[in-house]
Length: 322
Image 1 (spheres, rainbow, N blue to C red):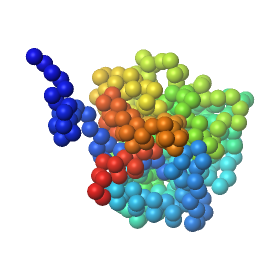
Image 2 (tube, rainbow, N blue to C red):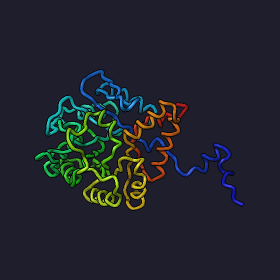
Image 3 (cartoon, one colour):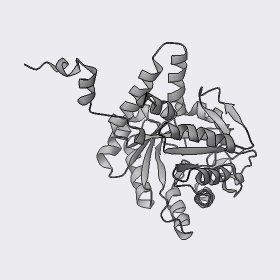
Image 4 (cartoon, one colour):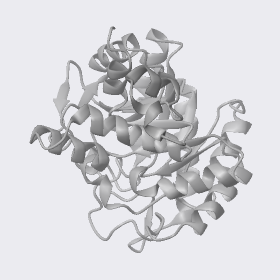
């Protein structure tokens, strides 16, 4: 007679029969980069996460590497903004300078750079404006120029998050004709117009100054559309496909896993992180247990890689004897 509890009686036995495991190789930590020197700024909306000037960033990466971290995704916060987001593709831009320094100091560390204009524009939208609307085709060459500047600085993977149609084709073409055919593209293919981005927008001061992003980010109710987005991006030259956010879209991750033969990345976003942090700080939940349960659920749904603000802490929890 079956008694399923037999395999649950002992912790070692539970580990031996465990179906899903989160490993250090699955995790990618986001980092925020600011202008200046000797700066480490706490982000109120994301306790435990900081904005770093490039020199301080190196120390943060070293700590992360010492725990086993091998990859990070980087977001720049420029000292100046304009309507065109011109500092996003400057050779001396905040991300470009940081990437050069990172690769010089830690050449084996995998650097992923976010490509978008929202952090760099005064209006906070992810593309250029025409008559108050985001102009898709006018934005494409700018995104391609940003991506090229990141590759020239030494980025290992380019990750466009803007959700403009045909941006992958534009970026792939620009990279290829400038000698960067070997640089992979991680596409934010299924990036939903989510309520979970609030803490991030506070961190980088990128909230739209008018309207919202629902005309270009995906409708939260749609799932089949995500497959169309992913297939289109893959056909245009994307190498990895992302679902963002993660926790509220586990069904989309599972759908991608079942239907796409491509590495799937899930982005566990700022709101997911901050909710757990806030509840843990109020002693309502166990932070470690809740965070690891979420990461395990994302992996169980089918994600090959997980971008998470808990990546560094998870590395510590996964290797308690470090």
